[in-house]
Length: 220
Length: 92
Image (cartoon, rainbow over all chains, first blue to last red; front, side, top):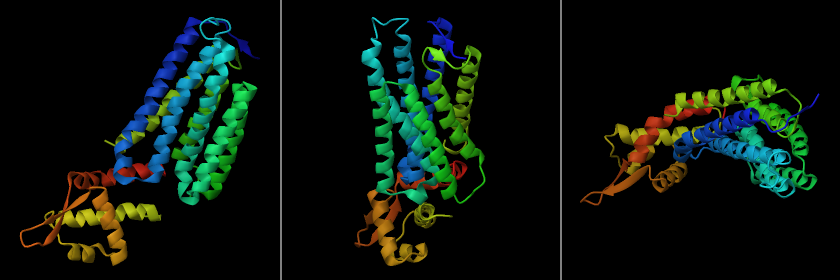
């Protein structure tokens, strides 16, 4: 059952707070690992931090896009939906797709690191964002990113030497999965109640905080 | 040390450590010997370390060349084990 929500200050407030905290932690992870990368130029660190930079940008764009989706009922005169929705969905699709690919790639880059793979990643991200742009739906982006996540997870499992699912790989999967869920719950027609939305946002923040905490143990 | 890149980080650490353990002043020839690398590999790493400003060359009055660590080189040695821990923890 879809929950059609009219402008609700409580929902808007929690959404705003969630976005701010998620973006802060994504950027903290990016900046915290800057010195390690600058000292070593290690590609695994590069892909890892770039993934969080792009997730941070994606969460900002997701919030802006959700404002545009709400605009029909709240402030269409300020943010004309027809004009802004496609504009936001284009970078949203690109940044979030690159975020998902690079996060998974950071764990398997040794197997695939060549220019062809990077070209493919950017081409896929551009294609998905263009498809969403022309269809004007974040749900298309959601479905295609879900398919992409399944594909890259299978490929990375085949490529990875350690076949067991480690805690870190679970965290990577959670970051990507929760992104997809958070993409699903923007807009007026929500598939979940407010409490469940709140639960997913809370879990997302816990995952970011756990990753940041794990990094802080090593990177002073 | 399961991969080539990881070995690279380790080799860089070893070269810097050798310099530090020799009172932060060593000639290129003993450094090459202690580093256990072929001369071509050593040159590659040596030039990389100079370019990244981890080490610098000092020439004394008798025109003898010595290698010393820069602050960045000391910083690398200090952070090395932590960075390896980070790489391991996140399977990077």
